[in-house]
Image (cartoon, rainbow, N blue to C red):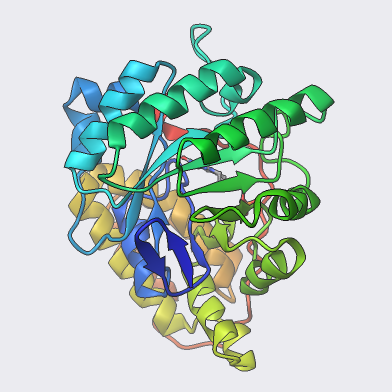
Amino acid sequence: MVSIGKHTLDAPFFQAGLAGYSDAAMRLVARRHGAPYCVTEAMLDQFLIRGGKGLAAAELDGADHPIAGQLMGSHPDEIAEGAKILVGLGYDVLDVNLACPVKKIRKKARGGHLMQAPDEAVAILDAFRQAVGDDAPCTVKLRRGTDDSAEATANFHRIFEKVIELGYAGATVHGRSVEQKYIGPSRWSFLRDLVATYGGTPNFTIMGSGDIWEAADIFRMIDETGVAGVSVARGCIGNPWIFRQARAYMAGDVEGVRRAPTIAEQREVLRDHFELSVGLHGEKKAGMMMRKFGIKFSRHHPRGDAVKDAFIKVKNLADWHAVLDAFYIDDAPTVLADMRDESSNVACAAVQ
Ligand SMILES: Cc1cc2nc3c(=O)[nH]c(=O)nc-3n(C[C@H](O)[C@H](O)[C@H](O)COP(=O)(O)O)c2cc1C
């Protein structure tokens, strides 16, 4: 059990914010497979304030709870206004992003780049927390620092101590530096030391992120670092079964942990995910978005390369169903896919 303020999760893992992926469609599929909690991708405060598409994208489906709405911004007043909008939309938890490594725009620091400007970071955290008040628990997502310097570590701790002092309910720490982006290992020893230092803080939950590729990694991170909860990120793109496997792990079902999705299970998820995506985005945008999911999903298929090539050509729902009819009708033995993907070509969608 993991507590985030007044919310209790019945499993110590959740689906991370993943810009360009973790929309309501991906979240609902993850929940059906056992994810007890999801975080949205980082939303830019200004997009919400301006209304229109940015605001419409933040609206929630009734089944999509509990959920954290994640905000990113550069100015205390704006992030406070954005936070109030998310509270009004019914988000259960409000999360500040101090982790996105995409370069600052027009010299305005935000996301992970605030880690090198602790005064600005604290002003943002303070304004956000004040704006939310007792309406919902607040959390923060941080990197372990800007880089490997002693100054970066000192800045981290200054910010982290303030997070606790301001009454945040928890923090998820990604064990890579901002400079690392998504390359190289997540430093789990940093998480372990963090838990040793701050782990006894009442009503404050420390969660970890980085290098969770299969269900067993979730529990290895908990064992090795002592974090209370684990954020599942690249390991769940095209792989909602990681949550089912993690539930099996908790139940002591050793076979279940290693059970690969059957072709029929894959077909069902591919169909549902695309239909949910069409409902959210319309057929054209869903077609573009689902291509990158298809590429990841193809790793579970015994004829993965051919399936991947077919998904790359998908433009609409009919094309998608044609791939399902060509490759996902006959049962065939499947093996657990390796979902490791250390590509660094990722960005926070809000700033693309
Ligand atoms: C494509 C992509 C988009 C991401 N977008 C967000 C985001 O919007 N908010 C966030 O907190 N983290 C975001 N992250 C970071 C992940 O949540 C996670 O911390 C990171 O990928 C490390 O975990 P992993 O090594 O297990 O993938 C993103 C990561 C990727 C790969």
